[in-house]
Amino acid sequence: MSDIAIYTLTSELHDEKAVAAVTGEFLGSLHLDYVFRGADYADYGTHTLDLIYVRTGGTEGIFRRLLPDLQLRSSRPFLLLTSGKSNSLAASMEILSYLQQHQLEGEILHGTPDYIHQRICLLEQVEEAVRRLHGHRLGIIGQPSDWLIASEVEPSVVQRRMGVELISIEMQELLEEIGTLEGLTSREGAEVIYRALKALVERHQLQGFTLRCFDLLSAVRNTGCLALARLNAEGVVAGCEGDVPALLSMAVTNVLTGVSGFQANPATINPETGQLLFAHCTIPLNMVEHYELDTHFESGIGIGIRGAMTPGAVTIFKLSGDLQRAFVAEGVLVSNQSKPDLCRTQQIIQLADIQQANYFLTRPIGNHHIIMPGHHKRTLEALLERI
Image (cartoon, rainbow, N blue to C red; front, top):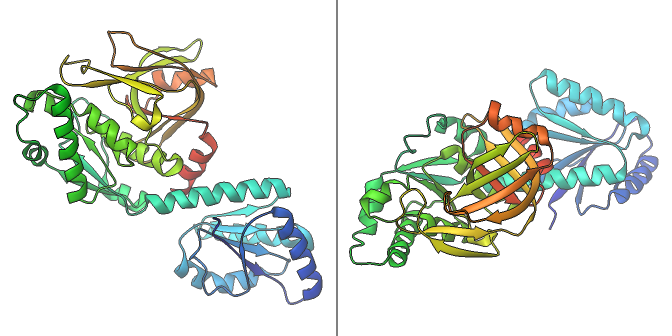
């Protein structure tokens, strides 16, 4: 259900009855669910989306007087809705210019009713995602794997920009929770690892975590692949190899789409055709049509997952550790394959824009990328602008 409030700016020089008639016609054409607050800004900042409807020209001074109080109520970008009638667009442009001169963010919502409707719905979806992301506690169990030399993050930046707290958890805590797996089958051992990780999630009140999973190979002769697949399907964002930028990317994916995404790395790339092969040994079980259990590829022990996603539209996403860059590309999952010389879940993806294949060879953001079903580029880019 929508949670949109509309507030108004109106010059005293304009006839209220005439302005009210235009207001009803204009807002009705947008086909939105909203609460109309008029000039009463008492609850500004409490809704998912707060729109300031600039109804007439001559309202710039009114907005400037309101601004200090509005800033106390909300730190979000200012959204200026305008019909274009009675010099409202000109006033909105002056207001937005003033905001930008004071290093404040804003946007004018103007155009056809259909465009405005779609833009507002997108912004509401983004704000809902930002709200869900804010306050997340994401664990780093063990340190990032030694080979992730380009995947560092600064926790204070993540906290400030995303509202996400990173929690360091010693690998020893997990190993003590697991205990001994001696005498257990690989499947039984995988079940113990799953229960141990779930216990850590509950103990530290986590919404997700990334695991230095290769340490389990030597410590307990098993893997976390099945545990991560199950926890992701249960709504706990669970990543591999202690890769924190990948974890943050999965958290964003999860709040937007309801799935954590498939954390994988390209195995082969054809820059001439824009076709890529991605692979990894785990995938969220709520993303696949069916799956099989195999061994972990690199070690040949424990359990790896060969999952098959439904072919069709996909989006590839990765956020950099410093939150300064992101990669978003749409494409099509052409097929799943199961060659023995790769990580067990393997996807052949055709990029919609062939030129984007060059990114992986010239300016990649690490090796892991997140694959999600559906086309989400527009929504992801809007969310990235927001954070």
